[in-house]
View (tube, rainbow, N blue to C red):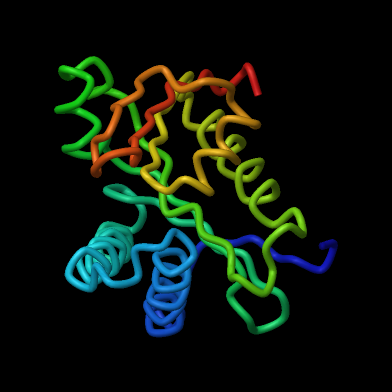
Length: 179
């Protein structure tokens, strides 16, 4: 989509972004066949709200978001911050000093239109400008894992059956300049 604007979120975007997180996470859980895991869904939504609050409170120093808009509609998000506890624990601290790129969400009505690709390109540019040479990214969602495998190849860490039988978790270590 050519009419997408990518920018930093403003304070007045917070309510709409929190609604966006709820909508995308709920949609994702249902598409993944785990829509009945309401507590997990609420924890995921709360974590994203906390990440956004950390960005707003620190002026982008603790967490750093970019959002995609089509007119007034939030169509996507991406952020970076410290590697999660899960990543640090499951890699035996090997990635603890890397930024993690996460909250890569695209509105269900706007998926498969290149918005995720535009958000990633903007994030690469942001990280390069900060002098960041590599980052990590993880996913426990099967659909997202397929996307990331096409984009980045096989994961550096495969946590087999991490979420239950057949539900793996994957972690990638990505060099910014290799993209």
